[in-house]
Length: 268
Image (cartoon, rainbow, N blue to C red; front, side):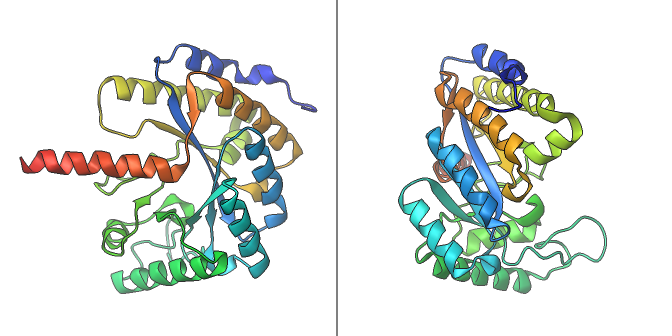
């Protein structure tokens, strides 16, 4: 791995070594398919080489016929899974943080974009998506969550700092681009090590949450050094007994089952 030493992973390796006997689940979510897709395909290859399914969040209105065909083929080969990333990835907020499904949008407008986005993406890839909704900028409102349930979506994937909801959700806990910009690879390893320990502690305490470590990627912002470092990270996660790569859709199913059991308990 040219220019990248593997000792940056030592804090994460120690956290995995100290973890519980059952492995902690990991997933790798790449956002913004439809933009700079020439940089997406190398990332897919890196993940596939480690046996990890890359969870691709695709922007429905930005997926070209060529990209849709490639995504469909890769999904058929189980190299990726395809999730809906909003509709257009457009900010509708006049003030504050960017959001496509934010407080400036009515429920009707949000519902229109949710269904239109789903239809567009399924037409582009000639088949169904996973039913997991990934809001652009990892943000949406409680209205959005209610609509996802009404419209038959399976789950939601946002940042772990987002507000709590009873809808099935699998959250990401680390942003590769932000962390590398702020503190380089040591910041990535430190954040992931903390996430591993939090997930292990939560499972031991029986908090009912899906104990997964989710890393968010943006292929358009990954250079050669990033890919080299990701190879090292994936090698560690793929082969360490304390970690297990699990597709986001499978984790979403687990979250749905857990929530269903909790709802049943609340009615008894």
